[in-house]
Length: 391
Ligand SMILES: Nc1nc2c(ncn2[C@@H]2O[C@H](COP(=O)(O)OP(=O)(O)O)[C@@H](O)[C@H]2O)c(=O)[nH]1
Ligand SMILES: [Mg+2]
Image 1 (spheres, protein in one colour):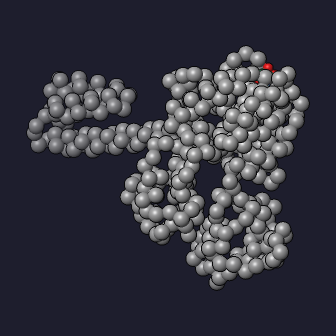
Image 2 (image 1 turned 90 degrees about the vertical axis):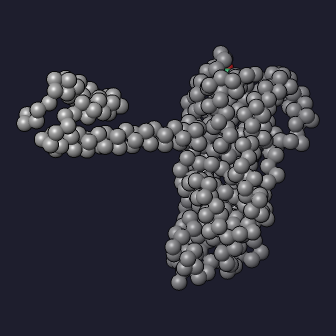
């Protein structure tokens, strides 16, 4: 040790070197620097410690950044990572039959139990519908005051960001009680069902960047929308212009703390005594607000109709690309309803098929005109076969 240092400095150096915790290490190093000798011979050593301090601080900042990203990712996305062509949350009171229903239509093997709250956390399963997958998520049973519990709040945040809420009603039990609890808790979570009046629908996502659909309905350009979102520091979002929309409507849609979610009712245990009367009561009271599908998981009744209804309520369309040789893709591109050729082209290859777009041909078996040449603004329909050509 060429440098003359005080015993305090030596002692502090020992403490600093023995400290492992990053934050504490920074503190100890700062103390050490404060005790450093003030002569020419120590300059080199001090400079080295300063460098070390800067490095530790950068490390700490990076770690905090990662934690922040993780936390905000979780709150944006809820706890379930979205997969498939759409996500459906099944909500209902405990024991209403959600797990049994999911087991009946997927490969999942969820616990079906006659004791309450067998499903304690949001649980995903994959439903295959024709040629696409739809993610079903069972949320833990709702009860009066769910929203005040941490777990309830977490599962309601999944429901906020989902594509469709399927309210599961147990036809062997009182209907008014179930509907009151479910609608009450969703309302307290500021989730509005089937009330989406806005021409602009936004969905905040944890990743995926900026996705903008139906831009032809917007008064401005896509670039203006992107610029605006960036100015608000929004990096991950889906914006859908479903009807002609102004700039103000876009701002409203972004500012609203209220979530507008599509919803339907699945009325289950249709095999139980009294279920017919309760179903009629349900239709009479709620049929104008929700489409209602009756099923029995136990007997496997009406499950195909339920799948179809779920698909239809997701408001998505499937487009199949066709290669120049005529080969049609097995798996569709899935887009929100209201999408146009440009939206599909952007998903296939933006550089080639949007920027260097030459022509598109749509094949529609169900249509009078089976083959038509169209432009980028042409609206797509479920089942379209699309051939894209670039320059
Ligand atoms: N009769 C009848 N009972 C059912 C049906 N579906 C579920 N159950 C029963 O209802 C209870 C709760 O079912 P479960 O799926 O665990 O409800 P969850 O809490 O909503 O997930 C169990 O005892 C099931 O056997 C059905 O379609 N008909
Ligand atoms: Mg369950």
